[in-house]
Length: 190
Image 1 (cartoon, rainbow, N blue to C red):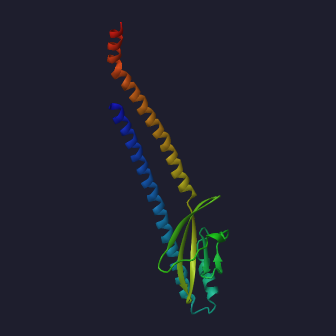
Image 2 (image 1 turned 180 degrees about the vertical axis):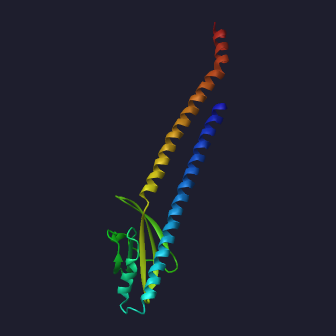
């Protein structure tokens, strides 16, 4: 009975620990998604505002869009493209396969795993000069996923140690508890 209680306690600690780690990882990923969506929303608003400011000064909308995009910080990985896939502007090294069309009123985010790491792709729909464009930004989340995997691996080792200790404690307790019974058996056999 004691052995069963010890094993149940160890298993419940393992399941509880896993659930805590899982919810922690989910919260961090949701935070990354929320930050990326806010960044795309603000970036889109900036591009729209800069284009609106220049609208009276430049009849060629693509020129105004280009000047607006020059204001984007260079550390951002982005692509602005028309719904038909025509790329108006993109940051250096932006992977073409990551560009995706946005949906009206929604900022879409998805995780893509590649051989070089994992990235969060976030897309928003923009209306500029009467045209509809998609703004796609990339955020590298490889480090966050690597940290989560490291934590999970550490948890597995701790779980193995706890289960090993539970088995050892159960074995020691069973030997201790059955010692009087073994003495009686030896005395009876003599």
